Structures are given as C-alpha cells and as structure tokens.
Image (cartoon, rainbow, N blue to C red; front, side):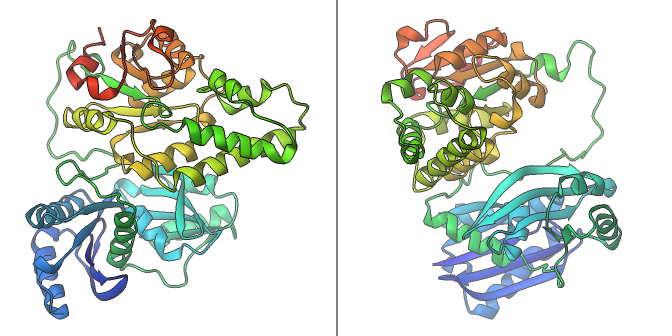
Length: 449
C-alpha cells in the first residue's frame, strides 16, 4: 500500500510517500505563496526519486486546514485530481492534527498552532491517549492571550510560531507552556500516516464533497452592499441534528456502558429505566435512580460510563440509514449544520470521527455547554446562536420525546425519526419518518415555515 501525503496549509509545503508505514521519501520546502506553480513539479521530483509513477499510488492523504487559503485550495485540488482519476481513496487530515502528531507522547497535552492573518493564531487542543490524539478543544482563531488562558497545566505548544508569539506565551504561562527544542516542519509524513490509519478503519472521504476547512472565510472580492430587506439571517436555513438515535443507533452501547459502570457499586441499571430516560443528560439519569451516592461516586459513575461507551463505539459504529445521504445533500446546498446532543462533547467528537463526518458540522453543542438538559430548549437555542441563524429558521432532527419537546420550546420545526420511540409518541413533530432514507433535503427544509 503506497500512500501519498500532501500538506500545503502553511508557508512550508511538505510531500511524502510511505509504503506499508515505511517512509520512502519526503520533500519539504519554503513555498510561501507559490503553491500553484511549485507543488506539482515538486511531486514529480519526489516520485522520480523513489522510482514510482503517480499510477502506483494506492491512496492520498491531504491536509485540509485550517491554514493558507491558496495553499489549501491547491493541495486539495491536486489530491482530489489524483484520487478521482485513479479511483483511489482520499482522506482529509486536519492540519493541526498533523502538527500535533509529531509530539504525541502518551499523556501529553498539545496545542498546535499555525500563524493566521492580523497576528492571530489558528489552534486547537489535543491530548494523547495511547496511539490516538483526542481533540479536547475545537479549532479556533486566537491571540496569544486566548491560548494562555487555556493552558492550565504542562502543554506542548508546537507548529508554526514566530519568536514574538513564543515569547508572549512564555511570559503569560510561565513554565506551563513547553516548546519543542527542535521544531518539525515536515508534516507530509504525518498526513500520510494519519491517512493510513483512517483508511484501515474504512474512513475514506468522498472525493466529490471533501472541502478545505477554514476558520474564517477568505475575502476574495469585496462584497457588494446588500439590500436592507435581504440579510443573511432572514434568508438562511439551518439543520440541527441530535446524535443518538438520529445519526447512529447507539442505544445498546449506552445501555451496556451504564450497566458496566454501575456493576462495581453493586447497583443494577434496569433496561426499562434506560428506555424511559434515553435522551436525557447523565445527571438526570443518575439522580432518577435514587441511589445514595457521594458527589465523588456520582461523578465517577458518569465518567466511567462515558469511557466505556467510547471504547465500544470506537470498535466500529455505523450510521443509521439515510443519515449520510441527507448530510451530503444538505452540504451540497450549503446548509449550515450543527449537532446538539445531551452527550458529552468527547462522545460527539468520537462518533463523528468514526463516521468521518466531523467536517460537515459547523457547530457542536454537548453536555458541557448547557446548564439544563432536554426537554429544556437551551441546547438547541445555543446551536442556533452559534450558527448565526434565528431559531424559527432552524429544523431539528430528533428521535426522543424530550428532544421533540425541546425543539418545540425553542420555536423550531422538528422532524422526528421513529428509530427509538414509536410514531404514536412523536405526534407533536411537524413530520415523522420511520427512517431518514424516506425524506429528502427539499422536504426537510420545507418544514421551516
């Protein structure tokens, strides 16, 4: 298996070829803003050194951002051209993950950075667990002060960082910020190896829909003045997805995880109680059992349950019928989407990563983001706020009665999926389907009045 890795997300471009995890060749150079004229000739030279032809490539990994607008566009165009013409898999790798991968010693906390415009930094926070990088803070644009506020313990700051930013972080964090003694700038190999790992899990991307990931939309031309009656918020629509029972059938994993977490306490977790509370947040579920638990035991049970759940779904979880097709249809229409769930954010990220669909959702709202769980509308209202779309222009896809009630209280349209509850319990929804493969994007968006 020969995999090509392409990283054109920053001023240094990097290309690499690996064969069965062994590096055959890598070429990294300061490309600055010349990606469109330098990357293809560099690829020809790289393949020439290995004695390979482009037709020998089995799969392509490409950094998809954040990063340079022009660089990402060129790199992704080349990668998609190769993947499409050869009919081979393509994997989009987050640029910040490729940087963090170089320093991912077990237990490490990492904040990879890429210089952005106007003195800002593109960054995210990860922790290394075993052979995996766990995203703990979604990519965002930040100042050095923003990053310093989030560095509460030893954290490796790595990537494209100039002396001014480095010195500022040293002053702001003291000895909590750790900088590599030798900065690595050759990330093409990391992109190829991360792509190889995803390919083994069957997580190839769709060559037709894979897009760059930008933290801020680039200004190519100066936008014209819009009429006062034609604002973005008044015209746009958005779709807010619940996760469990909508994107995936994860109920059995939750039930088994709860039962496994309560077993050491000598307490049972009845299946009938599980179905009654499915869709509620953990605090409500544990409290409803009426057990005499100390605050420490209470928190331990919740954390243990989620750990067991993530271990289970990481061994392979499949999307529910019609979910991926509907996501792709909405993406083609450029409809902004969010996931708003009672689950912890780490669970949401875990499942979206397993399904390889994280890039299609602009916003994630989880248990940590709200003070009240469903049927309180807070989770959906926060999703709409972060999407920048009025609640009345949003449609929620839900499977639970609590979720349906929350959507109603948020003044949002609601599509109910009868994957968990019978249709007779979901009559308050605007429309009820047995499966998402029985509705299309037009019908879904038509629910918004």
